[in-house]
Amino acid sequence: MPVLEGKELRIIGFLCNWCSYGGADTAGVGRFAQPTDLRIVRLPCTGRINPLFIVRALLNGTDGVLVSGCHPRDCHYTAGNFYARRRMEVLKALLPVLGIDPLRFEYTWVSASEGNRWQTVVREFTAQIHGLGPAPAFAQEASEQAQAVLKAVI
Amino acid sequence: MPQLESLKDAIAKALPELDVVIAWGRGLDALGATPLFITKPEDLDDMILGPSCVHNLATYLPGLRDRKVGIVVKGCDSRSVIELLQEGLADRDNLTVFGFACSGVVNVPRLRGAADRHPVQSMEHDSGQVRLQTDTGPVALPEAEALAAKCLTCTEPEALICDHFAGPHGTAERAAASGNPQGTLERLEAMDFESRFRFWEQEMSRCLRCYACRSACPLCVCQDHCAAQSRNPHWVTQEDTPREKLMFQAIHALHLAGRCTECGECERACPMDIPVLALKQALNREIHRLFDYRAGTDPQATPPLFHFKETEENIKERDW
Image (cartoon, rainbow over all chains, first blue to last red; front, side, top):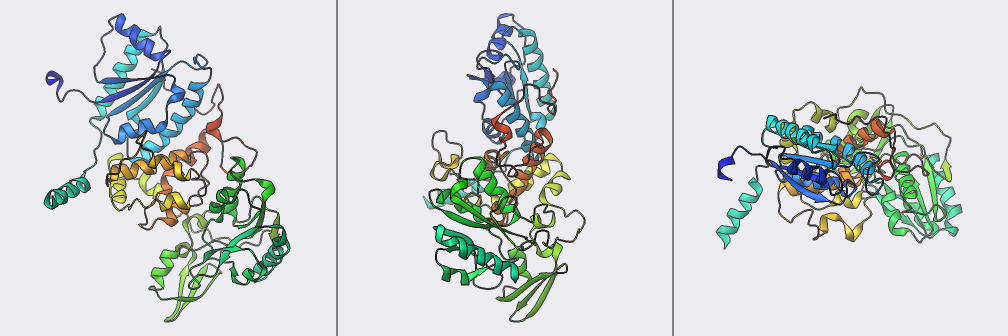
């Protein structure tokens, strides 16, 4: 970690088990070099995505969130990614109102054989997040005040 | 007020068949109405109708599902009723809806301020003005200031669904077109992302976590199973920080995506005057753009997030 200290941002990837997780694996097996900012969470399907996963991650200080699943019509469970697409499109309207740059969240489709495409997606998205810089953080004043009070009492 | 009389007549006729009729009753003064549960004809004496009837009474319906219930609705409230019917949270057979031509309701805290917190003896709303009579003298405010924000852009002054309608249709006095009143959403959109984030941080630092927004919302029906109280997953911690409070508002807005009828109860109920409706308005606007859908207008419609199209006309996916 020390080598990359301060150079890396935190990006969370929610990947569907059947396509994109396989695609990321293919990219690894093919030794396609990728930036290391992305941390992957494996899900059974993009239909498992609750938009609140993404909001929670962003409010907790993640700099970017990437969701990737099977191409439309290729879903292992037939329709999970179609529902997910609608939810994520709606979520895209909420983020800017909350004050989170909507470019911090993207979704895409990568199949298990598309190692090359996965490399492109990770590279471009990471570059996009680095372009935006670290996410705005809450000042945390309330919590610090409360802790100060607590320390004074105990 | 002939509208009130004809509504009372209709309720009196229907009352023997019903367990309860929910309407508005006299509050402490002319500005403060209170929900009124009518079970016997004498209760009708307390019933009122007018610009102080701010509450969306549809909030009570999910809790009274097994009863024969009558309900008096404004146009905006009727959309909540339709949404509840659509989601199976109320039964049409058990429900009798009384509609009337609504001329708008007032922004109570603002009028309380204008009346300098003195008790209000009477309130009138006509010809673009709201006039109060307090014990220290009369106060008059133009509609654009006195009415609730939702009433200034109202498109449904009459109930979209009803069994009994009081008075002739099309008699609602419409708020005079006072330009486009600037809401919180418009103000937010004029800011950059960082300022919006700080805006919410500031607003949410006032939040008491009383959850009045949730209690007042006619479509927040999970009661004891709200995600905000869940320990597993632990969506919201108990920390008193803007982050957790904003997270709850995000939960509220996203759980209402495609369902919210913008009745404004969340914002009205907020004791700290936090403009939480803006989040839901933003989602609704996008849902209308993407799916050409407005919640609470058609009991037979399927909510947009409950189905999909293989080819979505209005969704432009990013090409990597």
